Length: 70
Ligand code: FES
Image 1 (spheres, rainbow, N blue to C red):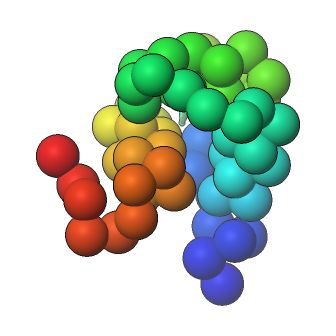
Image 2 (image 1 turned 30 degrees about the horizontal axis):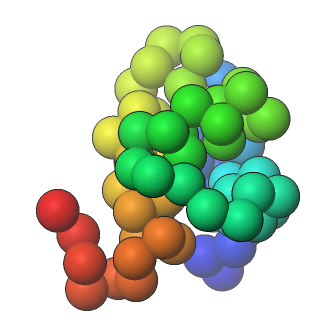
Image 3 (image 1 turned 120 degrees about the vertical axis):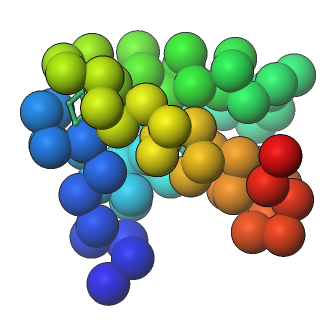
């Protein structure tokens, strides 16, 4: 299931963890700002960094919908 998909293996952060972290905040000016916040909450992408693009993709998907990928 998508929600249980492990996005960051180093820090054991799942898709649902990112979604939860994102929903703690009402709005962001940019995906990068949101990323920094999600990172603070979940510590995703602070290990090997290999999940960085995946995390960014997921955040933009959650913020703008699946069709709005940059
Ligand atoms: S998989 Fe996320 S930091 Fe390594």
